[in-house]
Image (tube, rainbow, N blue to C red; front, side, top):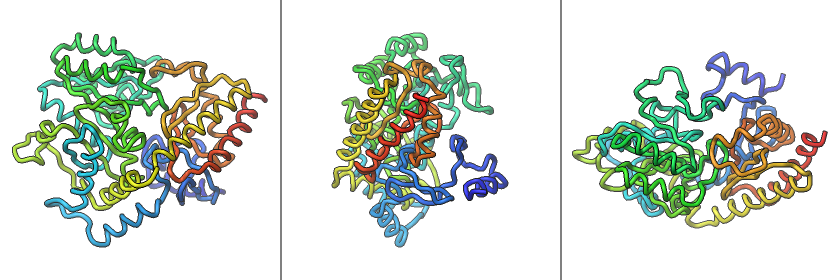
Amino acid sequence: MSKNIELYEESKLYSPGGVHTSIRNVNPMKVFTKGEGAYIYDADGKKYIDYQGAFGPIILGHSHPYVNRKVIEAIERTDLYGVGCTDLEVELARKICTHVPSSEQVLFCNSGSEATYHAIRLTRAITGRNKLIKFQGCYHGWHDYVARNMLSSWDMIGKRDPGSAGMLDEAIDNTLVCTFNDLDDVERTFRENKGQIASLIVEPIPHNIGCVMPQPGFLEGLSELCTAHGALLIFDEVITGFRHDIGGYQKVAGVTPDLTTMGKAMANGYPIAAVAGKREYMQRFNTYPGGDVWFAGTYNGHAVGTAASIATLELMENEPVHEHIFRLGEKMRSGIRGIHERLGIEAYVAGFGSVWTTYFMNNEPKNYSDLQQNDAELYVNYRKKLIEKGIFKMPMNIKRNHISYAHTDEDVDTTLTIIESVLKELVHK
């Protein structure tokens, strides 16, 4: 028996399903034991070029020596106090407020789900309203406020589709679902719920479903509609933030939301997240004397996460991180398009910066409904074949891939060669 299977079977004895996040339970099951730069290794010692990137946090490469060293230096002198603040918190907050346009003030927490929970509750306190708009297919965390109409089955698009048993009906029904890239739908929803909507939360690029780009004017239109209807605009930049620019995708798009949530790439894989926004709003949190919106967490601002995030942002400030990952991202996308052309394959290569995915359909998707056209069986089989040949992409439908600062031209060239061989095998049997 392989070591992968042996360890996985043991894991199932002690943990339900043997994994600690639901989406990690995939086929083929791998148990990973080492990550270094652009590569990950399973328990059998097999090496993979990694494009999963832990769903996005790994922007510099696995076990980055500078980030790790800064974390070690930090925890050799400091850790967690539960009172006051630390020098690391001050330094990181200063950096985020310097770079992220919407961040006049920032608070740290531990996961993207925590950050979106805090942001949404804050908007309800500010506006005195209960309802929230999100978009079909977008993911903003596991909590009741937003865990509906995520990766819905096709027959449940736009319908009442809670993501979990045990959710409160009041939470489900106060979350309204719109179609991405459809401003008319958003405007209609505002009109039908006049004076009841506290905020609109959006992934500026819906990466939960791969890479569906906002059409020109869409994000600007959302900002205008929120202003017109007295609602707050939340950009969920847990994925896009820091990966697409040190100032987030809001800096790229030139649209500044009222509040922003961040995580993943801000610390190259170490656990930390943040919620940021206008000072007048942030001071409603009870970290500010007189604030009435509860904000707490034992591990908020822990030395491990803050040190890792400072180091990650320092490298973005001082090295051509984004230039490198954007160049390799475009090399990958254009290379794959060339392969499709040579092999006569109908596919759409979507992406931005360091992110890409191949949809097996003949046009650009504009929203979740459009992705029904994607050949899901081919999409997943393609990824499984790549894993067999040492290229790791998440073996699930409509999932994005990530390039890190550790990837090289040689890695991309190797990947393109393997992609061509796999597509020949799958499409031209």
